[in-house]
Amino acid sequence: MRLSYVIISYNRCQTLLQTLARLPSVTPVPADDWDIWVVDNASTDGSADAVQRQFPRVHLIRNCANQGMYARNHAFARCTGPYVICLDDDSYPADARAVALALSHMDANPTTGALVAKVLLPDGSTEAPALPSIVMGGATCYRKSVLDQIGGFRKEFFRQAEEYDLSFRVWGGGHRVDRREDVVFRHDKVPGDGRASPLVHTLDLRNNLIIAQRFLPAKLRKIYWQDWRLRYQALARGHAKWHEIQKALLSARLWRLRQSLTGRSPLDDAALENIFHFRRQAAAIGDWARRCSVWRVVLADFSKNIWPAYNAARSSGLQLRCIADDNPAFDGVEYRGLPIVSVRNAFEGGGIDGVIITNINPAQIELRLKTIRRHFPGPVLRLWHRPRTATQVQVAARSAA
Image (cartoon, rainbow, N blue to C red; front, side, top):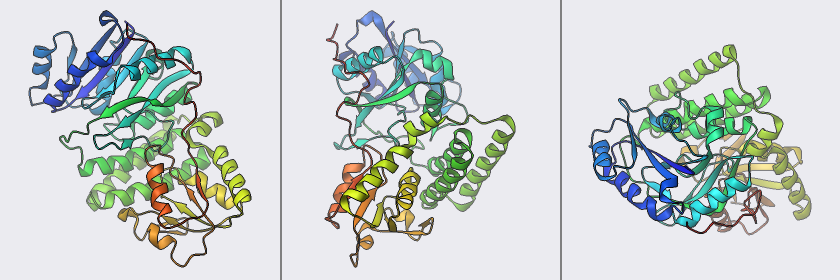
């Protein structure tokens, strides 16, 4: 067995069946050399029975309860090949080339533990993790031996930030998380039970704080606890009630206490650099400031990884005026003394020499740049660029077998 697909599903029967029907046409591997594992998270809409009836060759695991993202582990334990591609029930490779390139990349790069695809949405836009070195649950090819080593997904992350926990453990285990823009998956974003509930926002707050405590060394732990608490609490306010937010914070504090007693798993400097780009951003900002003779600067986006850009700009002697972000959740919020204002307001009155886009989400940078350009014609620094070759080793796609 060369490849296994692992899909978890909950109450989206027709969507799941459509995804299963697509996979044979986009899998350039002999039929007896790949398989599919579906983990049904206790659906009540007949999903499991429909899969068993219409796709008898699919390996079906019926959960007695909804275990969220952890449910994938039940399939991981039974996959026998070297590679696993995780899908959501509404995500799938765009074509056979995507799978061929993914497998070729994994073959050619033995230190790669996971390969993340570019994800296209139905409206033609894209989605990606806030940090490019993080996996996506429904669009990633994993090396099975790495999953065996690090243990898969963890129970405490029912959903939200589970991909960060897994990715940090991949990096911490001495492996890489690579990204390729030419490996394309699709995500139909089909609505489903609880997928836009207040629980999503409170889990974002709780789980990101757990990540900060679990994997970051002391100084960064304090910084990112503050940053992510401020950011995710602001995002949650418009969706969750006060007591729900306080419950999430209490749970995060209890996890902080637990990890202080049982031990943390801090990443080494190399892994931290690959994930957060501290030195890379400092060098880029210093060079840009000198070349463009900028001093008075606006930071664009109260992004998840704003700290490296903020710290590098301050260390370079730049005068930071404000943070430009049009998300209404951040109205009235300050970040380390800098007001967060709309993009339009950030440039009123002029006097700005340049803009640093702190957002390094590959799916959002171009949109942020276009928004800024409507208000500011001067120097703009992007801190993430699509690599000319998004691979460690250049490989060619195998032809369909």
